[in-house]
Length: 118
Image (cartoon, rainbow, N blue to C red; front, side):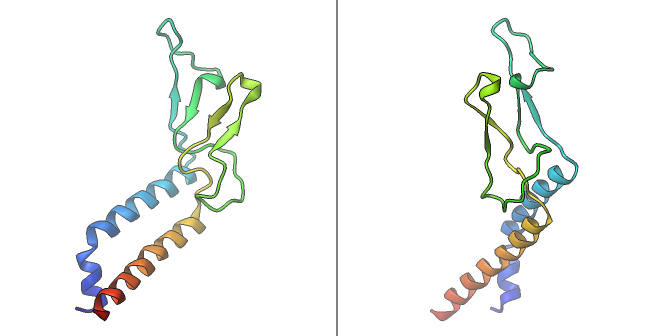
């Protein structure tokens, strides 16, 4: 079995890997925040106030950190809460997409080599 046949056998893994990475890049390019609103104790939404929402995907504040080595939580003492979640794919950009796209092929290559040594 050559390397390309091995990659064909791992097609599902590769497709899922690129879907997740593509989603991360997409939500950051188009600044899709995925805002989640919290309900108050009376059952109504408190939208319009920053301390009643959290961004699920990303925020529009960019730092030059390589994902996943970013601060996912921000100190929110001025909002009377301890910390606020800033998003799963915070600061994910094209450099991370390229790095993680290459990473899957490097990992699979070493896996292929290890299986062929036996």
